[in-house]
Image 1 (tube, rainbow, N blue to C red):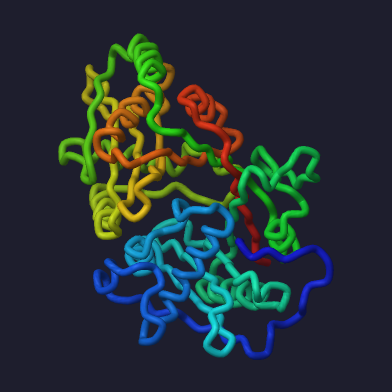
Image 2 (cartoon, rainbow, N blue to C red; image 1 turned 90 degrees about the vertical axis):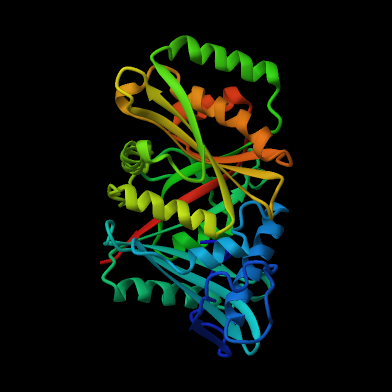
Length: 385
């Protein structure tokens, strides 16, 4: 939902010269070493036009590519997998790429839902292109019997100055500025704001004294647990427990009123996810806590890094199983993984993460570590009649 449309009357139809077509994805590995621009002609020119548009949008809004998938990631992602079908469409006016949309279709669970994303080149906004792309995406979702559509958009912290008129999340916590163009676009097309996540940034390196103090405090409460860690692939002996925690991650993370069901993870799904990261050029570091008495995997946290964006680390999942909470395991695994960052990725200068506004416990851990607010992400939903 990154298409901004100011309030007021909206165009009823797109520019007559705009044509929307499905985008073919290059074979894996063929172009992974190239920059995001890719060849301007050829059978996969539309794919590279989409990548270039995504990168231009990230630079315009954020001034960096840390929130944008690299070309290698995009090549891997758009092939989809047996758990999710992914469709990408490009709008052109003649030879000029003017916008894109995408549809993600879960195949194992959440089969009533579809993910929707829209992006329009700034020079082509207010000409009905966004509406046409949304119609294309929603039609694809309806074709597959989906009745609940979801989308998101992000905006920087400075886009929400004090005194801004806000639209509150319907079911979760947080709000977005009412005058934000993407907010206006979503509301005008029947989407409701269900949840707001906050993005936060941690400057690296974390002061050693701070890490030592937080680690020591966590260890005083976590005497029944021992730390372990791995890169890329979970050890075979922990794989079943890790899959079980991934199931819990799909239910324990706050999702407000979004129509998202529990995901079923097993060893095969975990291995497939790990292989996709590796093929996409993403390095990962996992720190976990084991219960000494039972050997049970009780908590984990994941950090990822890409050589194409070496200054930035992304904080992915962090979870503590409910029966093991109250022992500072969240802080224990996070501090352990942050120590690994300086060894594995010395060029990294910050860690970027997202948390639901209502997830006060995890936000408190991040604040203690030194994370500062960086922006907001709105989670939108539309139920089809």
